[in-house]
Length: 228
Image (cartoon, rainbow, N blue to C red; front, side, top):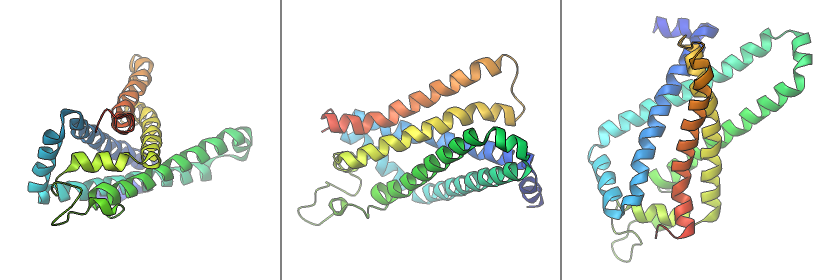
């Protein structure tokens, strides 16, 4: 506990918290994508995956609580660093970079709020199933074959162009954040070298592009009729 307090009170400690929680969240983003891409293997495959997760509900909820803790820590530490940087910024520097800083700050704030809104809606939509009455399982005449019919639930959800557009926009903003964040981790953890400083930004951009393509492919496939 004392170590966490010391980390939180220093700018370097906060940067480490942002980097480490960011790596943990990146791991989840990759693992979640691998699970989601089973949509292209058919209903049986993705629904079996959903049943496996449901059968291990306690570890699943522990993982969710851990992810929420990482997510909250990542956001709070980032906001705290922004405030510290603003407080330490000289007036001349602020005047010189005022336009650039305002655009950067507003863009990051907007993208952050959009991604946060998406996470909340995504959980309410597919995990808690409280935003679409069609996801409720009825004794007779239900639209889903079972409580684990993730395949048809995802298709029904993404058939709404507004939901698909919001999803694609959100994963796009997340990918932009990851493109910058992945390369920044090397600097924060002291792993950057002259060679890695050249190829790491390109590798980070490629990883972000692959993640965006993977996530966006599902709503696009639904809207285009590839997934029915």
